[in-house]
Image 1 (cartoon, rainbow, N blue to C red):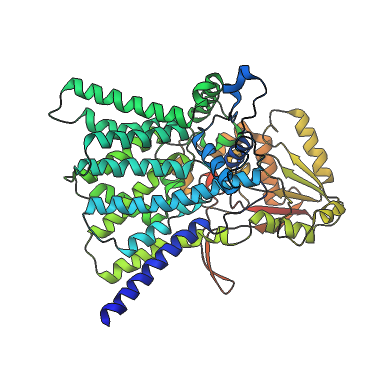
Image 2: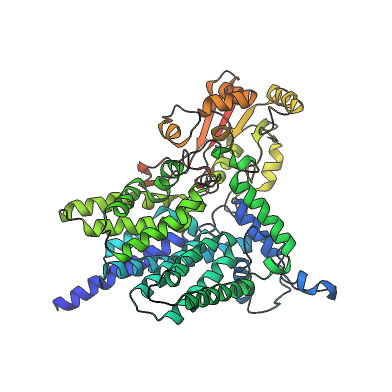
Length: 571
């Protein structure tokens, strides 16, 4: 009887784990729809809409067939989403489907969510391989399930979750080969297949190939010519897989290469665009330490991961390989000009693994370890709230409809993907009511204010008429000025940048800085009457127990799925 009870308890625990894993990845997967809140997701969805193969001109049959006309990413995730939509529709009209952007977006997100589930399983397998522990601990699962980066990227229909999955898979396969649990030929084929799919997803994943290549190039007691043969075999097979699953990178070479050169120039800072301003003067590694990792992992897990990297057994080949896997990807990307959170996506799980291994290794009282695990879980549990609740832009729009008078003149900001107010599909407010309000909303280009005298005159005109001012996100004031709506401690800013940003920005953009200084201080004649945020939080009976404000994180961590929106009214 005791054994039966024990089995029931164990089975219940694993059902809970499975339920939480799927829940955290799929809850609120329709966030923001039908609006394209994430620009990369929008571009991928638009590319899927173009994926058809009705050829009118035979001369361009190959060039036009399933050509996405979008090359920031490879075709593999686009084709995968297209195939799933085709299967969902009953395997009909292949090559002739009319796909809406909303449908494409939700299927891209389903792919991310499913891949995130599989990635969690691979993380467990990597930990078991390194520790040689046969039965996984349930607390391992909880730390993986409630990792903020896993939860966020599972809700983005972009390539980050796929790239994490491919890098984790290569690490796992390499560890199996290191333990001689997989023969060399099979290892090369599997590694080449994974590497080829990674290349077909994003060409920058070429760096992933260093992991498997290092195994046979530096293998002792192997002839030099055999190493060269294996190297050529692996690269050739990887390239073939990449061509099969992302053929238009080669068929439409000029378009691909042009896009690649542009994306490379943006990443390296050779072209400065409005969405990379936050990286001017940023210090490599320190920026990631203070602006990326603490938010994507939670401070405690990040610290545990660092401790694991530094103090776990340096004699262990498997742990050293994990260290190498981290450094191979982290160092080159850390020194890029553009330091978006997504550029670190493949190494987030590695830091998490180091944290779990460190907790497993240290000898502390069980009660203390339980407390550490519980505290480490809080940021991830809180992060689910973003998708459990309505999108913050819908909440702000509801308030606008109810509280801003008809015919109001409103000054807002451009380049936020979607301008508020917007109508939610679940909203009681209908489009007709918005039209009846006749709100005059000016989406103003503040980015070029200092360079364009005509814009300066227009701003004076709009301010003379404005009843309200919207600040729909931190994209301008946090990146182009040194003024924030509230007092804040800029200690981490000072550690993350090599320049005095306040002095630099005021010197470069005096009029823009003056505008936001006057707005936030009240000198412009406006006061803040509403603020809407969707910070990660844990609530009970409608009361917030703990909240994790993250507006000071690297911009893309917050502006797509939970920006802070502020509304100012003329006094």
